[in-house]
Image (cartoon, rainbow, N blue to C red; front, side):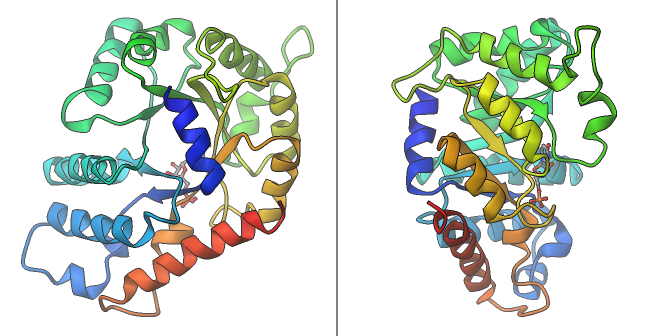
Length: 284
Ligand SMILES: O=c1ccn([C@@H]2O[C@H](COP(=O)(O)O)[C@@H](O)[C@H]2O)c(=O)[nH]1
Protein backbone atom coordinates (compact mmCIF):
# COMPACT_ATOMS: atom_id res chain seq x y z
CA UNK A 1 0.00 0.00 0.00
CA UNK A 2 1.34 3.39 -0.99
CA UNK A 3 1.17 5.02 2.46
CA UNK A 4 3.06 2.07 3.93
CA UNK A 5 5.81 2.77 1.38
CA UNK A 6 5.86 6.44 2.31
CA UNK A 7 5.85 5.56 6.01
CA UNK A 8 8.92 3.34 5.49
CA UNK A 9 10.67 5.97 3.37
CA UNK A 10 9.90 8.62 6.00
CA UNK A 11 11.39 6.41 8.73
CA UNK A 12 14.68 6.60 6.78
CA UNK A 13 14.28 10.30 6.05
CA UNK A 14 11.26 12.52 6.73
CA UNK A 15 12.64 15.10 4.29
CA UNK A 16 10.38 15.85 1.34
CA UNK A 17 12.36 17.85 -1.21
CA UNK A 18 10.09 20.38 -2.87
CA UNK A 19 10.78 20.94 -6.55
CA UNK A 20 9.16 24.38 -6.87
CA UNK A 21 11.56 25.26 -9.63
CA UNK A 22 11.48 28.77 -11.08
CA UNK A 23 13.69 30.14 -13.84
CA UNK A 24 15.22 32.65 -11.38
CA UNK A 25 16.59 29.78 -9.32
CA UNK A 26 18.75 28.35 -12.08
CA UNK A 27 22.51 28.89 -11.74
CA UNK A 28 24.25 30.44 -14.76
CA UNK A 29 25.71 27.08 -15.78
CA UNK A 30 22.15 25.92 -16.55
CA UNK A 31 20.47 29.24 -17.31
CA UNK A 32 22.97 29.86 -20.14
CA UNK A 33 22.44 26.49 -21.80
CA UNK A 34 21.44 26.77 -25.46
CA UNK A 35 17.99 25.25 -25.05
CA UNK A 36 14.46 26.13 -23.97
CA UNK A 37 13.33 26.92 -20.41
CA UNK A 38 11.60 23.57 -19.95
CA UNK A 39 14.81 21.68 -20.78
CA UNK A 40 16.75 23.89 -18.37
CA UNK A 41 14.27 23.33 -15.56
CA UNK A 42 14.35 19.59 -16.11
CA UNK A 43 18.16 19.59 -16.15
CA UNK A 44 18.22 21.47 -12.83
CA UNK A 45 15.66 19.10 -11.26
CA UNK A 46 17.43 15.99 -12.54
CA UNK A 47 20.70 17.13 -10.97
CA UNK A 48 18.91 17.87 -7.69
CA UNK A 49 17.24 14.45 -7.67
CA UNK A 50 20.57 12.74 -8.41
CA UNK A 51 22.28 14.70 -5.62
CA UNK A 52 19.58 14.17 -2.97
CA UNK A 53 18.04 10.77 -3.72
CA UNK A 54 19.73 9.15 -0.72
CA UNK A 55 18.67 12.00 1.60
CA UNK A 56 15.06 12.50 0.50
CA UNK A 57 12.15 10.41 1.74
CA UNK A 58 10.15 11.71 -1.21
CA UNK A 59 9.77 14.61 -3.63
CA UNK A 60 6.93 17.08 -3.99
CA UNK A 61 6.60 18.78 -7.35
CA UNK A 62 4.66 22.05 -7.35
CA UNK A 63 2.71 22.10 -10.61
CA UNK A 64 2.17 25.89 -10.52
CA UNK A 65 5.85 26.51 -11.24
CA UNK A 66 5.57 24.42 -14.42
CA UNK A 67 2.13 25.59 -15.55
CA UNK A 68 3.53 29.12 -15.46
CA UNK A 69 5.87 28.20 -18.32
CA UNK A 70 3.19 26.72 -20.58
CA UNK A 71 3.85 23.60 -22.65
CA UNK A 72 7.61 23.62 -22.04
CA UNK A 73 6.97 23.84 -18.32
CA UNK A 74 4.47 20.99 -18.32
CA UNK A 75 6.90 18.88 -20.31
CA UNK A 76 9.48 19.59 -17.57
CA UNK A 77 6.87 18.63 -14.94
CA UNK A 78 6.16 15.31 -16.69
CA UNK A 79 9.83 14.51 -17.14
CA UNK A 80 10.61 15.44 -13.53
CA UNK A 81 7.95 13.23 -11.97
CA UNK A 82 8.84 10.39 -14.35
CA UNK A 83 12.55 10.71 -13.60
CA UNK A 84 12.12 10.77 -9.82
CA UNK A 85 9.79 7.76 -9.92
CA UNK A 86 12.22 5.89 -12.20
CA UNK A 87 14.83 6.35 -9.45
CA UNK A 88 12.44 4.51 -7.12
CA UNK A 89 11.38 7.66 -5.27
CA UNK A 90 7.81 8.47 -4.24
CA UNK A 91 6.43 11.62 -5.83
CA UNK A 92 3.69 13.93 -4.61
CA UNK A 93 2.07 16.09 -7.28
CA UNK A 94 1.19 19.31 -5.48
CA UNK A 95 -1.77 20.34 -7.63
CA UNK A 96 -4.38 21.11 -4.92
CA UNK A 97 -7.19 20.11 -7.23
CA UNK A 98 -10.78 20.60 -6.11
CA UNK A 99 -13.90 20.50 -8.26
CA UNK A 100 -17.26 18.82 -8.86
CA UNK A 101 -17.11 15.08 -9.34
CA UNK A 102 -17.29 14.98 -13.13
CA UNK A 103 -14.33 17.36 -13.33
CA UNK A 104 -12.43 15.74 -10.47
CA UNK A 105 -12.65 12.45 -12.43
CA UNK A 106 -10.59 14.11 -15.14
CA UNK A 107 -8.05 15.49 -12.65
CA UNK A 108 -7.73 11.99 -11.18
CA UNK A 109 -7.16 10.51 -14.62
CA UNK A 110 -4.71 13.27 -15.54
CA UNK A 111 -2.53 12.87 -12.46
CA UNK A 112 -2.83 9.16 -11.67
CA UNK A 113 -2.40 7.95 -15.28
CA UNK A 114 -0.37 8.96 -18.30
CA UNK A 115 2.32 11.64 -18.65
CA UNK A 116 1.79 13.28 -15.26
CA UNK A 117 1.33 10.12 -13.18
CA UNK A 118 2.37 10.62 -9.56
CA UNK A 119 2.07 8.48 -6.43
CA UNK A 120 0.19 11.07 -4.37
CA UNK A 121 -1.86 14.08 -5.29
CA UNK A 122 -2.78 17.04 -3.09
CA UNK A 123 -6.52 17.71 -3.16
CA UNK A 124 -8.61 20.64 -1.97
CA UNK A 125 -11.68 19.01 -0.43
CA UNK A 126 -13.36 22.17 0.85
CA UNK A 127 -16.05 21.46 -1.83
CA UNK A 128 -16.94 18.27 0.07
CA UNK A 129 -16.92 14.53 -0.50
CA UNK A 130 -17.85 14.54 -4.19
CA UNK A 131 -14.66 16.52 -4.86
CA UNK A 132 -12.72 13.60 -3.36
CA UNK A 133 -14.66 10.46 -4.31
CA UNK A 134 -13.43 10.35 -7.97
CA UNK A 135 -9.86 9.82 -6.72
CA UNK A 136 -10.77 6.89 -4.49
CA UNK A 137 -10.93 4.18 -7.21
CA UNK A 138 -7.28 5.01 -7.96
CA UNK A 139 -6.47 4.85 -4.26
CA UNK A 140 -8.25 1.52 -3.82
CA UNK A 141 -7.34 -0.24 -7.08
CA UNK A 142 -4.16 1.43 -8.34
CA UNK A 143 -2.19 2.02 -5.14
CA UNK A 144 -2.37 5.80 -5.23
CA UNK A 145 -2.60 8.20 -2.28
CA UNK A 146 -4.05 11.59 -1.46
CA UNK A 147 -3.07 14.49 0.74
CA UNK A 148 -6.08 16.65 1.56
CA UNK A 149 -5.68 20.29 2.58
CA UNK A 150 -6.74 20.38 6.22
CA UNK A 151 -4.97 23.30 7.93
CA UNK A 152 -2.71 25.12 5.50
CA UNK A 153 0.54 26.86 6.45
CA UNK A 154 -0.19 30.36 5.13
CA UNK A 155 -0.92 33.36 7.39
CA UNK A 156 -4.48 33.70 6.05
CA UNK A 157 -5.32 30.06 6.78
CA UNK A 158 -7.14 31.28 9.87
CA UNK A 159 -9.51 33.51 7.87
CA UNK A 160 -11.69 30.52 7.10
CA UNK A 161 -10.12 27.34 8.46
CA UNK A 162 -10.13 28.52 12.09
CA UNK A 163 -13.69 29.88 12.02
CA UNK A 164 -15.95 28.36 14.63
CA UNK A 165 -19.06 26.50 13.57
CA UNK A 166 -22.34 26.37 15.50
CA UNK A 167 -21.20 23.40 17.57
CA UNK A 168 -18.01 25.23 18.60
CA UNK A 169 -15.71 23.19 16.37
CA UNK A 170 -13.39 24.93 13.96
CA UNK A 171 -13.68 24.38 10.21
CA UNK A 172 -10.29 22.66 10.00
CA UNK A 173 -11.32 20.26 12.77
CA UNK A 174 -14.32 19.18 10.66
CA UNK A 175 -12.03 18.68 7.72
CA UNK A 176 -9.62 16.63 9.86
CA UNK A 177 -12.48 14.39 10.98
CA UNK A 178 -13.59 13.93 7.37
CA UNK A 179 -10.09 13.01 6.23
CA UNK A 180 -9.81 10.41 8.99
CA UNK A 181 -13.24 9.06 8.00
CA UNK A 182 -12.55 8.98 4.23
CA UNK A 183 -9.42 6.92 4.88
CA UNK A 184 -11.19 4.65 7.36
CA UNK A 185 -11.24 1.52 5.19
CA UNK A 186 -7.90 2.26 3.53
CA UNK A 187 -5.56 1.74 6.47
CA UNK A 188 -2.38 -0.21 5.72
CA UNK A 189 0.08 -2.25 7.81
CA UNK A 190 1.73 0.93 9.06
CA UNK A 191 -1.54 1.91 10.72
CA UNK A 192 -1.93 4.89 8.38
CA UNK A 193 -4.49 5.27 5.61
CA UNK A 194 -3.90 6.16 1.97
CA UNK A 195 -5.82 9.39 2.54
CA UNK A 196 -3.41 11.79 4.21
CA UNK A 197 -3.70 15.41 5.26
CA UNK A 198 -1.73 18.57 4.52
CA UNK A 199 -1.13 20.44 7.76
CA UNK A 200 1.23 23.40 8.06
CA UNK A 201 4.11 23.36 10.51
CA UNK A 202 3.37 27.01 11.20
CA UNK A 203 0.30 26.22 13.36
CA UNK A 204 1.60 23.93 16.14
CA UNK A 205 -1.57 24.04 18.25
CA UNK A 206 -3.78 23.12 15.32
CA UNK A 207 -1.34 20.37 14.44
CA UNK A 208 -1.56 18.82 17.91
CA UNK A 209 -5.35 19.00 17.75
CA UNK A 210 -5.46 17.32 14.31
CA UNK A 211 -2.96 14.65 15.34
CA UNK A 212 -5.16 13.70 18.30
CA UNK A 213 -8.26 13.50 16.09
CA UNK A 214 -6.61 11.56 13.27
CA UNK A 215 -4.69 8.55 14.57
CA UNK A 216 -4.69 6.86 11.14
CA UNK A 217 -3.82 9.91 9.08
CA UNK A 218 -0.32 10.51 7.70
CA UNK A 219 0.68 14.13 7.17
CA UNK A 220 2.38 16.15 4.47
CA UNK A 221 3.80 19.11 6.34
CA UNK A 222 4.83 22.30 4.53
CA UNK A 223 6.24 25.32 6.32
CA UNK A 224 9.77 24.27 7.27
CA UNK A 225 12.58 26.72 6.45
CA UNK A 226 11.38 29.54 4.19
CA UNK A 227 8.06 29.83 6.08
CA UNK A 228 9.68 29.79 9.51
CA UNK A 229 9.02 26.23 10.75
CA UNK A 230 11.91 24.62 12.65
CA UNK A 231 13.26 21.24 13.74
CA UNK A 232 11.93 21.90 17.23
CA UNK A 233 8.37 22.24 15.82
CA UNK A 234 8.80 18.88 14.12
CA UNK A 235 10.17 17.34 17.32
CA UNK A 236 6.91 18.19 19.07
CA UNK A 237 4.97 16.33 16.37
CA UNK A 238 7.31 13.34 16.24
CA UNK A 239 7.28 12.95 20.03
CA UNK A 240 3.60 12.09 19.63
CA UNK A 241 4.09 9.90 16.51
CA UNK A 242 6.32 9.59 13.43
CA UNK A 243 3.40 10.39 11.22
CA UNK A 244 4.70 12.84 8.62
CA UNK A 245 6.95 13.90 5.81
CA UNK A 246 8.22 17.45 6.06
CA UNK A 247 8.49 19.53 2.91
CA UNK A 248 11.04 22.21 2.22
CA UNK A 249 11.22 23.74 -1.24
CA UNK A 250 13.02 27.12 -1.36
CA UNK A 251 15.08 26.22 1.71
CA UNK A 252 16.68 23.39 -0.29
CA UNK A 253 16.55 24.21 -3.99
CA UNK A 254 17.70 27.82 -3.52
CA UNK A 255 20.61 26.95 -1.20
CA UNK A 256 23.18 27.72 -3.91
CA UNK A 257 21.89 31.22 -4.66
CA UNK A 258 24.43 33.97 -4.03
CA UNK A 259 27.14 31.32 -3.53
CA UNK A 260 27.84 29.81 -6.92
CA UNK A 261 26.74 29.89 -10.54
CA UNK A 262 28.65 26.75 -11.43
CA UNK A 263 28.00 23.01 -11.49
CA UNK A 264 28.88 22.79 -7.79
CA UNK A 265 25.38 24.25 -7.10
CA UNK A 266 24.24 20.73 -6.33
CA UNK A 267 26.68 20.52 -3.43
CA UNK A 268 24.92 23.42 -1.69
CA UNK A 269 21.55 21.85 -2.37
CA UNK A 270 22.69 18.46 -1.08
CA UNK A 271 24.15 20.12 2.03
CA UNK A 272 20.83 21.91 2.68
CA UNK A 273 18.88 18.64 2.41
CA UNK A 274 21.40 16.91 4.71
CA UNK A 275 21.22 19.76 7.23
CA UNK A 276 17.43 19.58 7.26
CA UNK A 277 17.52 15.82 7.85
CA UNK A 278 19.98 16.29 10.70
CA UNK A 279 17.92 19.14 12.16
CA UNK A 280 14.90 16.84 12.31
CA UNK A 281 16.61 13.66 13.44
CA UNK A 282 18.64 15.32 16.23
CA UNK A 283 15.50 15.48 18.35
CA UNK A 284 14.56 11.84 18.10
O1 LIG B 1 -0.49 24.73 3.33
C1 LIG B 1 0.31 24.63 2.40
C2 LIG B 1 0.13 23.75 1.35
C3 LIG B 1 1.10 23.64 0.40
N1 LIG B 1 2.21 24.41 0.43
C4 LIG B 1 3.22 24.23 -0.64
O2 LIG B 1 4.43 23.74 -0.04
C5 LIG B 1 5.55 24.35 -0.65
C6 LIG B 1 6.29 25.19 0.36
O3 LIG B 1 7.41 25.79 -0.23
P1 LIG B 1 8.57 26.51 0.67
O4 LIG B 1 9.45 27.12 -0.35
O5 LIG B 1 9.24 25.43 1.46
O6 LIG B 1 7.89 27.52 1.52
C7 LIG B 1 4.99 25.15 -1.84
O7 LIG B 1 4.93 24.29 -2.95
C8 LIG B 1 3.58 25.48 -1.39
O8 LIG B 1 2.70 25.67 -2.48
C9 LIG B 1 2.39 25.28 1.46
O9 LIG B 1 3.40 26.00 1.56
N2 LIG B 1 1.41 25.36 2.42
